[in-house]
Image 1 (cartoon, each protein chain N blue to C red):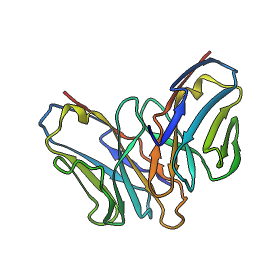
Image 2: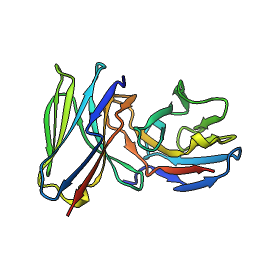
Image 3: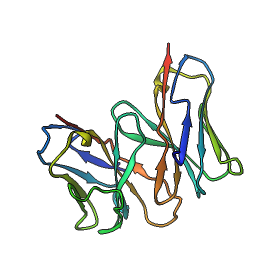
Length: 115
Length: 106
């Protein structure tokens, strides 16, 4: 079974530029998460999708961050414009529908550096 | 105060030593997860616990629901165990600890 795929793996941009990350979850997984992990900290949830609907985006900085999962499969996370403090690893995870205790499966992450 | 606290934040040990990483949480939980993150950034789920104890190879995870505390143990540690170990609580929505950076020297 293929895991969660993310691209790119690394991205370096200058502040005020735009950037987009892509995630393809495990086939059949209804729930998709985007996390931001700043160096030395644990991941922080940015947004949770259930199929193509948003379940929780309370910690997403909506003035500059946006995310979509139009067909309920893959998802994109965009930052426009980027700030220095956005430098982090952006993790995508997916979980099958069903039991609330099912584990989440994480992708390899995208490491963003904003200069 | 964070909802999930891990200790120690950094741990360096010699190959073969017995390792313990602790996690305390302040919220009610349905499950607790131990995750491993290697320098490349990807995260692998090691355990999901709701009670008692689980063992997988050289890794053992325990949880005490009454005390809101969990421990991750590594027996006969090896340099390839070097990674960041993260405790997370919750089910659909996970709350993460800050991670423990473990370095095992040969």
